[in-house]
Amino acid sequence: MNTSGRPGPMLEVTRVSKRFGDLVAVSDVSFQLGAGVTALLGPNGAGKSTMLRMLSGLAAPSEGTVRVLGGDPRADVELRRRIGLVPQQESLFEHLRVREFVRLAADLGGIADAEEATERAIGTVGLDPADKRRLSTYSKGMRQRAKLASAIVNGPDVLFLDEPLTGLDPNQRNLMIDLFHRVGASGRCVLVSSHVLDEVQRLGTDVLVMGKGRLLAEGDFRRIRDLMDDRPSRFRITTDEPRALAAGLIAEGLAVGVEIHEPGALTVATASAGRFASAIAPLARDSRASLRELRPLDADLESVFRYLVEGR
Amino acid sequence: MSNAARVFRFMTQKLLRDWGRVAVLVVLAALAIVIAVVMRVSDGGATPEDGAGFLVWYGLSIILPFGSLLVAADAFGDLRDERTLVYLWLRPVRAWSATAGTAGAALTVVVVLLVVPLIIAGLILDVPMADGALLAAVAYVGVFLAFGLLLSRPLLVGLLLLLVWENVIGSLSAATARLTIRSYAASLVVGEGWDVGTPVGRSFTASLAVPLAVGAAGLLLATWGWRRAEVA
Image (cartoon, rainbow over all chains, first blue to last red; front, side):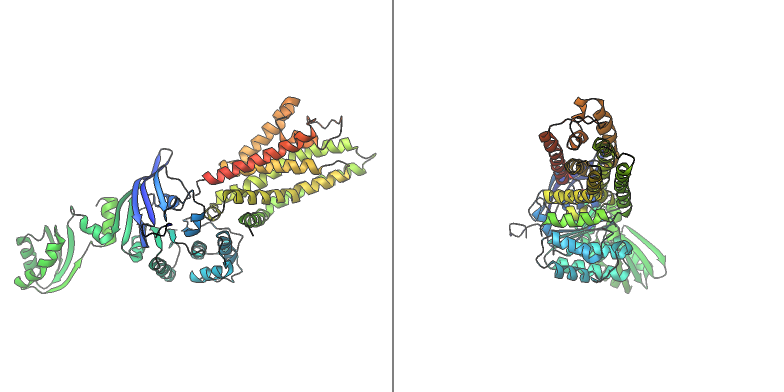
């Protein structure tokens, strides 16, 4: 839903560019997002943080338009009530306690029951609202969670998180990822930036991939992989008759390359993953080979990322 | 409580948490009182004109402008340098609420730490410091608050402004002195015909209006700067 109450994209980015002098940080990027969790993926320097800053209104695009919930996040002060941001930087108001830090955000956000909202937000991220220590004494992971509590205290409809899992231990990461999914599932738009593929893969399948300031791909990364027609898909097959199966695959034109690299295992490169998937079982039967394992090797996000960002 | 009041409370606490800066300002202000006492009890006692000369030089030319610079330029400047401005800017806080609250906080700190001691020193030396010191504080806080938001090196630029503009250019002639805040503040402090080493003689109305206008202009500039700030 946008501000007018009608269903529609919650984020609309149209031909947005951002320049800092001669440096082009973001170049001609367009996309739309609705509710749910989307990962903003890209290497360091890809323009992810700049994009999040523009989406949250902290920076103005040099060209193009950014619409959040139908409004301009930079000009519309009231819209900020519905936007939460976890910035990348570690810095906090060091002299405050976590309760004071989150309460300040709640008060400035005009929340009716700021005290209760503060306790709830701090509890949600697994910190102690009664903690008397100042934020200056907090570990990196605790600081991340304090920032997240501050971002969610006003129940934003749109939540931007810039590398939010940095510094968290595995258990905390799991908790945070669960939280993002819960927020996304409640009809809110959650955009999480990361350069760590493993993290992104756990955030879900919807991605925006950025590299060198440009949007390289968007959507379900598995579908993006399928669209990479110019690159063969690779499968690993474990069988009792690898040589016979390899010969059959080549003879049928199902493989553009076969590698037998250990007894009983082969890697097959195919130009048509769909045709391969439907033909492999009959072919194995005809070749008197029993299939023990059939596993796609590059249907994962890393493969998409390598292809789009690194060109390999 | 309004957002301006919340920002005021937060910024006042933050400014007072910088113990080093507070200590320096307290010592400098205490020194004004100590010197005033010494001048008062010295042989024959200092005349009000002597006292005004000291307070215009030490109070209005040194500790008040430089102290205001340290406090007001750092109010937003610190948040920008620490990259914590985002936590205020991203909230639904109107620009004027943010800048008025912050200006109020900086002015409160300057008044408590510097203006009040100067008024006390003035009472000891029979010099009416209140109006001049307070109005100078308003003007300097407004200007330096804007510097903190708009300039990448607000302390350096502020220092240059005070040294070159307020002190050198302001001392060249009575005409150029009209361009300095110090001249208007000092005009409220000195009596008829006193020589305090600073060109004075501004009218009462101008001495009230110009510092207030400069302070208001600084606040407007800061508000504009808040709106157009690119926050990291």
